[in-house]
Image (tube, rainbow, N blue to C red; front, side):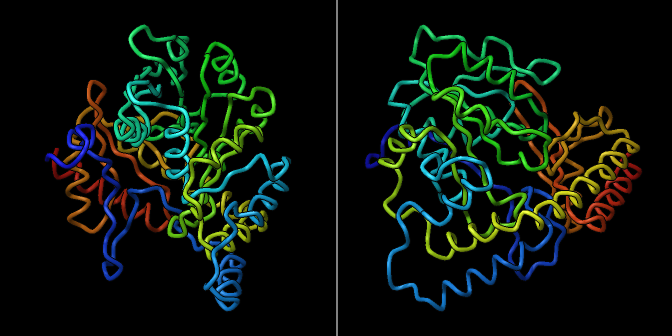
Length: 355
């Protein structure tokens, strides 16, 4: 098409997981949403904000959220920038650091949006393969001869595998790089450690997070980045003027204020994850150790695509993913115990019928 940039015309575009219509009664385990409602404080805060009125613009920097997040994380508010979900934060960082013809590096396989954001920018993506133990080698930090490396992105825990790299190993990689390194911690509340502590040690290290997963707020769209203040100041130049609305700021602030709710919800998710792993292992699936609210499942003797399709026919949605030059598998979100039990039962039925 003659009206759009060549990079956009050639773009495949990011395809989100299937979102059923609200009227559909399904078991949805394909987009790593939290199966439980958010803290009651969130709804209360949104209602209060709505009654106060929506005729004025919200805080451009989401100041109330920055103060609350700073208190939870042990940093000053000016170390935090809020966004319309962590995807917005990823977009802001790509726009701020990476120019046309330059390069972003990410692990492989990982979150496929990184590639889309690079291509929209007219940049390229350079993949560094995970090693057999799901760690990253020095090739992740290697400079490029043909294009300037401007940003590294590491999802930790990783998607789709749920695997985790210890913060000190990430810090060592960062010391070998000449560009900023963004740690995407969308699922970190289900892991044992975070890389936030690294931000103060190196100005190039940044950490982004979302409230979509552990706080049960996928429908609210709220994320944020932690970086040193002078980096935040530059990123703020790139964001939309009012990238977070008043209702989402109120809800997100209330969510972070209720850390007791988070601890209780996390415990439930981890207990269900343990049962999901055991049941899928009994069915012959192999899984790397998950540090997230999902598991990555591969089976040597069945068609992953067939299982996903037959599950969908039964109103159960999991994420079938096929990575070029790597392979395919099933990413299954941790739902309620009942949801996962029904999914596992149906998978067993499908395998038996296919045998």
